[in-house]
Figure 1 (cartoon, rainbow, N blue to C red):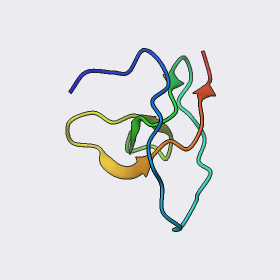
Figure 2: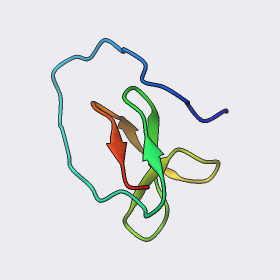
Figure 3: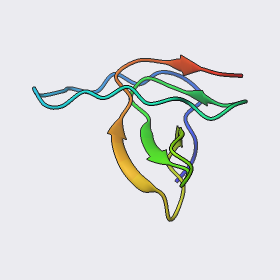
Length: 62
């Protein structure tokens, strides 16, 4: 799976919304699949990550 380079609009249904800290030096674009890096920080989903869900908005921690 490739990392997004811009925001993507996705339709959302009502559900649980969580806020988690973003790993340092990374950007998560709106609509991107988000995963846990095993330390409790969110990052763009990578193979082997726990799937958090899809980003509701852009998060820039670069």
